[in-house]
Length: 118
Image 1 (cartoon, one colour):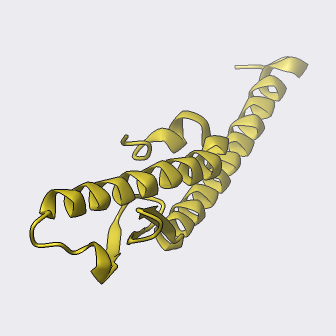
Image 2 (cartoon, rainbow, N blue to C red):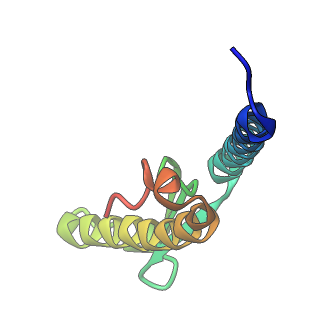
């Protein structure tokens, strides 16, 4: 089977474009993995009650610590403490969403798989 000048050349150019796309996709995946690691290590601090309650989490909303000022621990009013803890968590979630969106937005739809839960 004989090919004219444009026969294989057109296919060869298409293969080169495909290789470039594959390299770009691999690079994007590597960058996304690096960003995911950064989000795991990013410290977010949520607060409530003038820092009477402080919640520590990463940008993926994994809570790894809570500090409570002894002044807000009232055995007669546990509901207030519960509200402060919830408010600090929600403050942290809001901040984590902002960081997640900022860092993952460059990946388009691929970057939206797992963040922004609230």
